[in-house]
Length: 322
Image 1 (cartoon, rainbow, N blue to C red):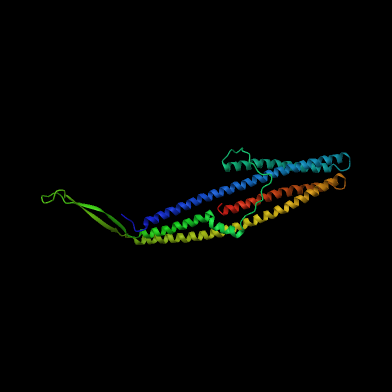
Image 2: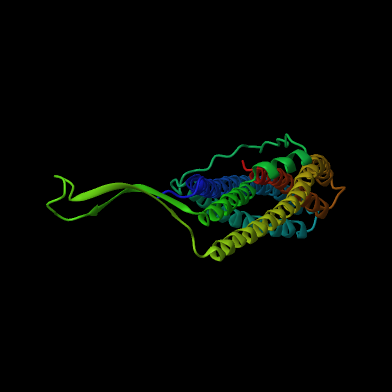
């Protein structure tokens, strides 16, 4: 039996487009995993830099503590300066302990994502790169609409539905049959030798009786197509909104990098001046501690901004299907 012309091709096209959609689902999962790996790496970097910065500030506070002890012993300042710095050191040591514990968790998480030994050391740069996005926002949006795996899945599914509609329409068409048949005529004295049965060609046509069934199937596919089109439109709008928010984060992180580079430099210079003035007795110790906190804060904020910028770039690349 032979189906209506083009039926087999339509079946093949449905299978091909469905397979392509499943492959895009795989690529989406792969791209999502890569983004998660990159984001976790940036978290590892920031936490490690936070440990280094905190340790540097503890060394600085220990230096101030020695200076304060000398002035207390000389009777030039109150013992309160000593107590203040001890409290500050205690707070930073507690913060450092938490960061060290967190670093172990982050490295285990990162190694598990890579499926390697969880004890393997994660190597990070001393200063995270500050690469910018190559494309502008409109170019990124165009790339998302063309290459985003979630949108490609919906596009492939729509194409599969289009071929399914064509297939359903052809299933309602007649089928043809071509073959050979035979009939047994029995034995008789008048029969020629070898003519107990006659073989003859047969051509037939099968007409579907329930036409409304196939019409209903076609209508169902059309409704599914409309639903997929609406889903794709909603997905495009959602991705555009996500891009706008991520782009805002990207620009904000870039601004913060420039800001905290400047702020940290000024805070370091101010701290050096205050240390000199305290040694000569013209400044109180509280101002030094206040500026030391600013140095710590600006250092952490700078590394957070660097990490946030690259995380935003990574997520934008993920949206573009990379």
